Length: 348
Image (cartoon, rainbow, N blue to C red; front, side, top):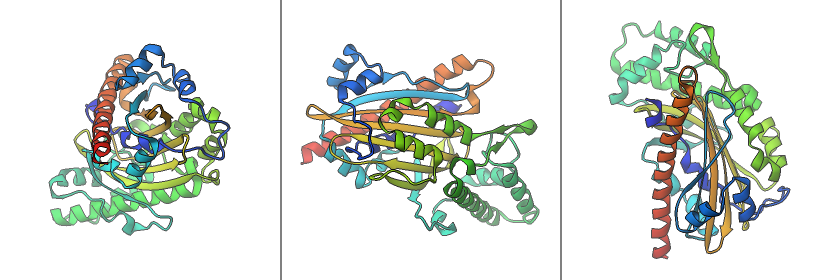
């Protein structure tokens, strides 16, 4: 079932614990931020006692699951930044099989560690035989290219099939990366579904960026650049591309991720989009923030994920179940992060 292993990029949220960006219209105080997200006095008390609280994020379609969460980490902002820059945060992701950054000159070798292993042979074979539908997120040209490849593998043994599947998937990932880098959201090919239908992650991500009004108010230039990428990003922002191989619904899946972060001493913003996901959901969009709060750091972030599996009959119930499962997973990861940061505080 989808909700058991939805790959919400919680590991990204503290990438937002940043600093005063020169292009910010203004930086909210912690009190303003809490008010913007509808977090009232009772929840603030809970936050100050170490609780994790949720806040409402409006969903823009039947396919979208959205949720916001906040917590106060008992460590200063610079220590969290250092923790993230050292790459420690990714280590807390129990469902992550492998990942690697993608340089500006990325080529097919950049994906050499992405692979189905011997125990995932059935998944590799299913990929080679992919048809329009929701088992794999592939465009029509990608599915057609797989059919052409199949014709050359009629008598191939398992080792050859595994090698062919891995090489083909790497080629698809590279082409999607290059298309996005060249044309931004317009370069994201739709996923082919049954009966000639498609899923459109580009439209979903554009809608998410447009409707993330809370951060857009404070960083209008960043929002505009995010919508019109690859137009230049504002000064003082840094970006990163990476691929991930993560277990989702007990299946390995490829993910292409684009992150932008600003870092400084008084607060800032982190945004991330998964512009390609191999299966189970279509796209994901994260906006996160961090502000110094008393002796610690106030962390708040929202995630939006679009999936065909929560639309249609019973949509309301599916959304309710989906949000609850996502919430549980996010809380589990936040608790793990909190524990790790406390441990590091005592070590220092």
